[in-house]
Image (cartoon, rainbow, N blue to C red; front, top):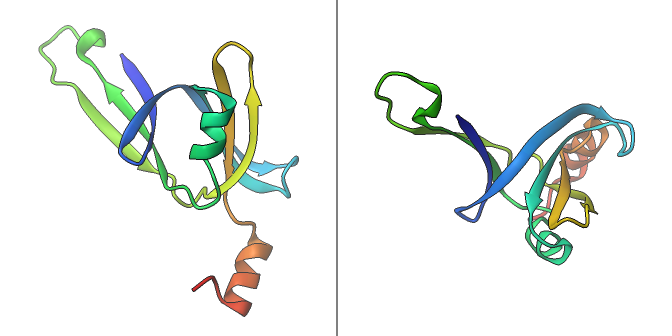
Length: 117
């Protein structure tokens, strides 16, 4: 079985899935990732801010294998998705969080004018 988590500050939060959009029409056509976590809106608002470093963690457990199997995890760094987007409260104890990458125009401005020091 594969379980997914969102890792922030070395804490893993169980995820109900991650969806990505290469061109999010609702947010300046930027590349976005949206994931659903069990937490309150206020917790998500404090945790997922601009600049948050986060990763997707997939943990494979032996339940899907007939032979002896040692669980292992794969970590996918998503720190380049560092713009905080919408948080949707599903009113069932879960929220969906959208994080986005810089657009090409934002990257060009950063190159032209320099980033934050």
